[in-house]
Amino acid sequence: MTELLIALKSKSDIECELLIMHHDVHFKEVFELGIKVSYIIRKVKKDLSIFNQLYKICRASKPDIIHCWDSMTALYSVPVCKLLGIKLVNGMITDAPPLNRFYKPRLRARLTFPFSDIIVGNSKAGLTAYSAPKYKSYVVYNGFNMNRIDNLIKREVIIEKLLIQTRYIVGMVANFTVFKDYKTYYKAAHKLLETRNDVTFLAIGLDTDSEFSERLIDHKNKTCFRLLGKLSDVESLINVMDVCVLSTYSEGISNSIMEYMALGKPVIVSSGGGSDELIINDLTGYLIPPSDPDPLCEKLDFLLNHSEIRKNMGAAGKKRIEIDFPLNSMVEKYITLYKLCIS
Image (cartoon, rainbow, N blue to C red; front, side):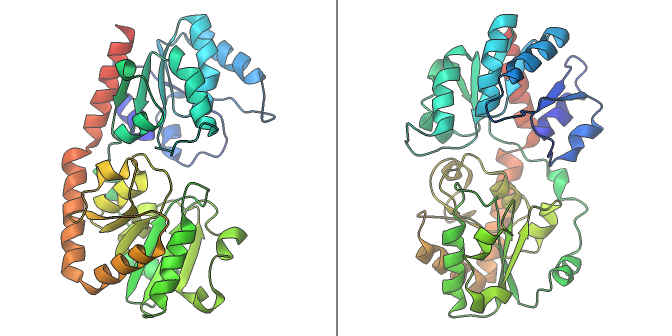
């Protein structure tokens, strides 16, 4: 969304306004764009005043389109769009969850899809998983801005700061949530450390430094882990990794995987969902069975022992991002959908 806003700001015929429902904004670039930013903050979990706040803002600004980016904002947007005659682009599909009719975003999808003018998913698997109606559903893959990997912090600076003394570094960038399988990642790491002592494992993302995360680390291997929590400048940290992992249960098109590949890193990722659309198995990385530490450990060991394969996989991954997932393609597809929506 941030990259899209940056691109749309340069279009003379498009005006944007951003509504945010949380004070914790990770991508601070949105405040440098010169667009209007408003906050709609819930006082309690089920705060019905949100509808009124959103209605007042939209009645004053008279937008042609509301583009929501998750299931809750879709739920809030539907009645406002219908009352004010605003078109709704429902962009809530960013994962590809397994079938579970009680999964809250799936319930919200059932409530909001009938009233959405266009439904956007960032993967084909996501649209299928949510049973999005085909006649108004579109895939727009995330686009990667290659400028993000300019001006990286030097490798030796990162290594010194993290007190890393091992030859190799393996990392996973993901928030510590029920959707990310850190348990399998840590198990595979411990298994690998039974046979070698030349690897440090990084965990980067919200709550990776929490007590719950730390409990999964065997005390005898504690010095081989860096649980770093939520950080900015993630690209510089990825740049020091030799192999990048994403162990997960549900995924659309993962920004972490795109960052890994754009930085020329070989990847090992749980198969399924949008990851199967992003990664070419055995060429740009490995797709492995989910929730199984053994194949993850095996592939890690193999890649760490074969530098030429790491190099070739990383180069192939970077080329794929440059050719098949460019930022300008994402932007143009969204603009096309906006025009379609109001035509």
